[in-house]
Image (cartoon, rainbow, N blue to C red; front, side):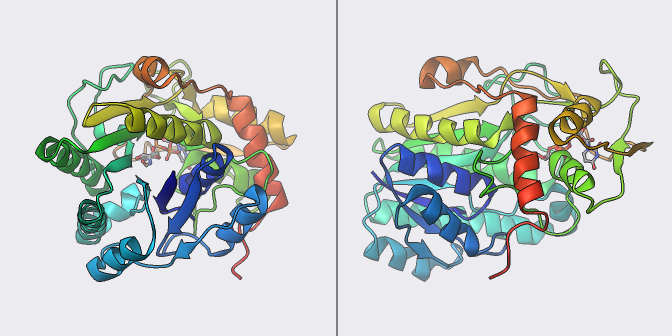
Amino acid sequence: MRVLVSGGAGYIGSHTVVRLVEAGHEVVVVDDFSNAKPTVVNRLESLTGASIPVHAIDLTDVDKTAHLFAHEQIDAVIHFAGYKAVGESVAKPLDYYQNNLDSTFSLVRAMERHGVHRLVFSSSATVYGAEPALPMTEDLPTSATNPYGWTKVMIEQVLRDVAASDDRWRIAALRYFNPVGAHPSGQIGEDPSGIPNNLMPFVAQVAVGRRDKLSVFGDDYDTPDGTGVRDYIHVDDLAAGHVAALDRISAGTDPISIWNLGTGQGVSVLEVVRAFSRASGREIPYEVAARRPGDIAASYADPTRANAELNWFAHKTIDDMCVDTWRWQSENPNGYPDA
Ligand code: WQD
């Protein structure tokens, strides 16, 4: 199929592009490059050997989005594009609601108008809210503790209602846990701008010497070693999950499906630190700091529905994730070049 990947130059989008091409799909990327660099697509073309058309547009622009569908033969869409920084969303709620919701409305309307009814949406375990039952299952109620999370909750609801309005829709909402790691080639990886919010890229920058030390946000949680526990999933396993979901909805009959993409294993902050030291051969200096507001003690998936219905499993371990992250970070100490 010819698949439009919105946010295809981003971290998870770029890794999914590789898996789509490897699975025999053609890919078209649309990205506003507000949080990604154009050079990523060059690396994707050299990694895959495929020519990857790029549309550098803002999906909230209804006319430009419609123009894209009028000029590209699209069979399916994987929708990653959106703002995703939790803290930033608290400071700029209107930007987050407007961008994430309007871009989705504009995209889905253009799909409808051009008879494209296969959609995979990038959702998040953040929709399970502040105190979810563990392990998280897809039937849990959804809520959020920040505007970013609310945009994911709201878009899932919009897509449920769109699917219910026309039985031609085949939609998947994929709830990611904690995506980390990098493609084993070391050519693409996570490249956060500024100070990383997330643990793995921050640890990687300490290991490569860009940061002095890690602040461990609390060691007094009700977890085995007192530090936060998360379900880290290798971005390459996550990318494979998108291809599996696309195949499933293309062959399936359910208007909309929700799947957790996680390993089902919880790993603590200090376990990540130790794994990264093993992978990099570097000490990771850290100090215990205050808890980060909004953090929960533990989060990990029940992935059995995706395992059974998608025949998809996360294979890579936390050590694999750290080895691949270290290769990316050490070969690209300052991330992607600007040009
Ligand atoms: C992981 C653990 C921190 C940084 C976030 C978003 C979520 C999703 C994934 C989009 C926690 C601890 C972190 C640091 C630390 N994004 N930590 N020092 O918060 O689980 O999830 O990213 O969908 O929506 O909320 O990931 O990597 O920020 O934190 O001690 O410098 O590492 O307290 O226990 P999180 P994270």
